[in-house]
Length: 246
Ligand SMILES: [Zn+2]
Image (cartoon, rainbow, N blue to C red):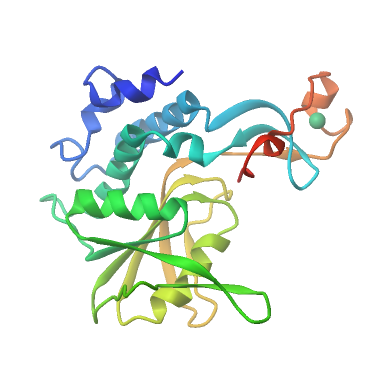
């Protein structure tokens, strides 16, 4: 099942032309590029089992016919390298040079992504972790001595954009530094078309770019509302066998 992924670095798969550092990948920005990247991203998610079609019982109690488990794809380093290559290309100038100084992400998936995107760009990659507050709420914070210097341009990366909450939670941590957040990049946009995030504290708007847009409709249980229920397909509760999906 992982042939498509493990073959990504072998030069035989359709996506290999966009491997990091290739001339073709640099400066990609046409509609054809975007379609190719989206198709390749979907192929990597499907081949790894990160995107499944079926009849799923979601945490919310609603039913869905698609299920995402991002860590299924993130467990394959070759796939992560390729996906991060697409993200890195978003912040290169036409000469292939990075237009940012530091890549940041939220734990846990964002640690992997910030590392690899930064590695490909030749800049720093750091992460913000969740810190519990006294009132049992939480916020994100750069710890471990991570700093962003005045004027440094920041690229925020994350895996799945759902409600925008994960990106929004990163904004106060970034805005507490003297750096300048220039762009957010996500692998999958399942938000229904969010193109920017607005910081609650400062009102500052940051554009969001995604590699692949995925529509994940959900339904009330029952044959009157859920097509899979109506078709009599057995219901699967994917979250019960491991970590929760997104
Ligand atoms: Zn159903």
